[in-house]
Length: 522
Image (cartoon, rainbow, N blue to C red; front, side, top):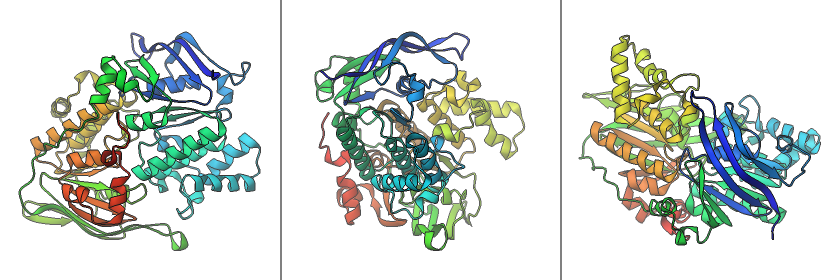
């Protein structure tokens, strides 16, 4: 029998942030064995990340263990807090919030490795380069000299994975580590993580919304619902023989329903992007992020943009929003028989970002967050602002009770709805959506997708939808543009591109997607 690495017995975690203390995790009983891969799944807000935080003694302020206990076998005389970064390592979902924005990647690696192993700077840099190579970042020019904001979301996530694994821990908590990665890199990263797990006899707690990945890589799966463990079983059979209604519903929710978005009638484009160029860095470190990108979008339609991590998707979004300067090119907005070449942010183009926690001010209430766009526009009447906020909350199906809450007090799905509501406050014609569902569980993802379709139909909005998930893209998009190393290498109607791709890269991208292959069945 495998040795028990972690033993969680009757653990209850409560929160005292509200007037009446609430229970977040209720009577949790779970063992993690030495050398095993344990999957943890559950809907957004079920308590998955809270459980991970409890295992490393990093509960957020206001939360505390109100019952039960957690024991480990690393060293019974050492508190778990002192084992973080030594025996225990965690990879968080959001790398931008985890990496120090004021330090280069090399500095952050050096600090960790010098503290963990006592390396000098030269040896620490050598070790950092080895891990950068292992996570497929060695081709990024000057990667160690870059700051986090100079990397794409996928690149930052790979840096976090390299940092966490470089300390050679005995237990790794991987909290949604592939959320921002394309199908290529997702497979490579998970293969890397679990090959190391096998070689070094590491235990892994894989927290994920991707049920197929969890079943493929894990030995056992624990299902968390509303703060309670409702099922723990063998990964290969948990979905087949379960009599639990929630587990059964998870399996059913994987089946995608066909898109119901009405197709737009032929008309003039509402937005035309022509010959867009953007370069990062200078001289030998220069990287061409966008290379003459051209596309157009029509009223009421959705353009899906797909491509691997680092292909230029987020750069395209930021330059189209004019929150990042382009080297050259035109961004033309058509409105009322006129056309404007945009060089500054325009209220007719809104955005919903992947990281709802990072894009909402944590020190502002939801009321202030939603009212801010109107205040900046010059609206002064409090009654007008309040009415608009109430109408928008109703549109995105949120309760008025959240208005006095802060973003950190909401679930991921609620925060994403707030982000959508804020983007709609100034009544834009176009919404740019950067991975808006990638960080959400399958239940919440479905609700957000249905909400976006509903809002698009009601307001005749145009969407530019960026995603790694070909299943999502196939469901929401009328047309698709495939981005590769800053170039649109293929575009056309959704079915034409996905069913009959003409470029080898597109074919490989589709072949690597679970949506197409379905090699692992649940």
